[in-house]
Amino acid sequence: MTKLHTLHDGGRYFEGPRWHAGRLWFVDCMARTLLSLSPTGECEQHAKFDDTPCGTGILPDGRLVVLTMFSKRLLAWHDGKLSLYADLSKIATGTIDDMIIDGFGRAYVGDLGFDLPPPPDRGAVGRIILVTPDGAMRVVAEGLRFPNGIAVSADHRRLVVAEMDGACLADYDIAGDGGLSPRGRFGQMKSPDGICLDREGGSQPSRRTPSSGSTATDASCSGSRHRDGGRLPVRSVGLSAKRCFASARQRRTKSCGNESHPRASTSST
Image (cartoon, rainbow, N blue to C red; front, side):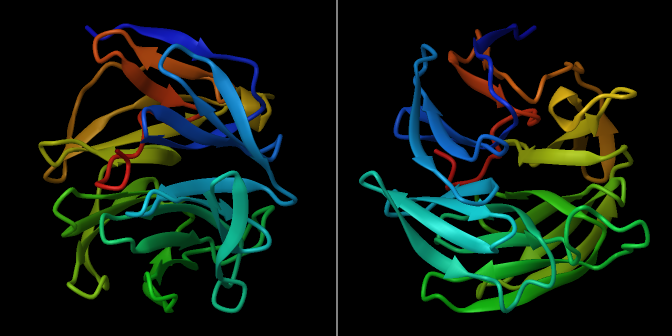
């Protein structure tokens, strides 16, 4: 059984873990910082934001992209500087939350369809916005209930998004132009959050389960594995949203923030 140990502690709320260039990159949403960790746990701060950062992605040229939730922008970090990569304020209808970039440099961004804090009657108004390398933007999926973590398969033919309010995973085929066609929904879990796809095509979501009276930073998550519409049991591990964990077996970071695993795709290497 894989053993976890704490690699880094003391943050406020970690999100968007990506393994890149020998380090784990992620944001602290509440501290509004971009951070990275070495395999031995040395932490370095790279940037500070004037908005809440959340999702991240890695472009094929090595630039790191960070999503800012309320200004609805994607910012590229390179050589110690942040620059505007894409402004989604005219296409997003709500707060943008999470994202992923595939091996072709296409960014898939979750649009909640409402502004946070979430209204009680929000419904299935979430969308996924595609940003292509030439800067074009378009909506490629609609009717989602709080789209959260997004994963893309290594062959770039499948996308899975966690529907936090829908208590399930939404599954899509990816067309050659990056468009999405719904395959259906599968899995039943409360508040799915982070997600990755493993080598066998199984979806591994984490579930955000705040304890009674806790704040968001005290939330814990456990993981489960789903494949071909079914559920395969795995060991559940309670995780703090303020810590990074490492796998002793793999000798690499296994978890950050409230994620069960760095979200896998060809861009997360």
